[in-house]
Image 1 (cartoon, rainbow, N blue to C red):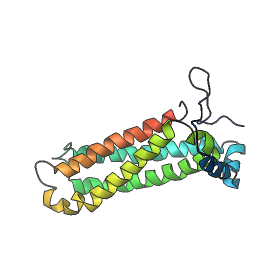
Image 2: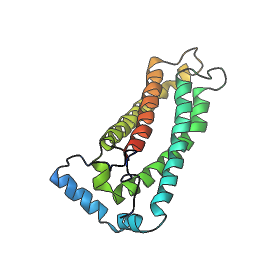
Image 3: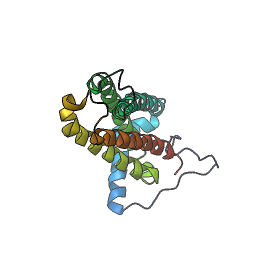
Image 4: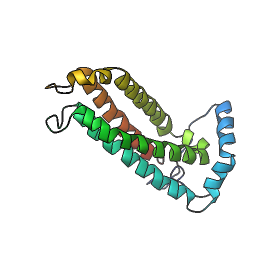
Length: 184
């Protein structure tokens, strides 16, 4: 078996351990690993590493613009750019980055599902992704619907600032947990 990020040795030379997984989950994850796509990723040279590159580029395209937009919600650049203009320019790039990161991440997960799912960081990463998604939905269905009323204001509303802060924390956590998967 090839060494992947999920099975790479820790800095102390040991391999990550697998947490205890329920039998039904283990069976489902084993089925996922047995699919032709997962097998293709595991045995074909350069596929996993190419997916890692796509995943990292997707993360950069997602997190970079998201951080800039979150900082704008928190008040940075208030005189330079409106929230609407920031959203128009940054969020499409973040969406494209999310698509690339999500698709490549799912395929990489399938290749080593049992091992990755057994790490301590994987469930935390998944929970943070859910929180990030809920935060985005609440922001766009809530305070952002009234953006024209507050975009020129001296200070963004508390709900918008909160959404920006939650986004900064969750995406930072997602990136950190993604890296920690190889070590937990």
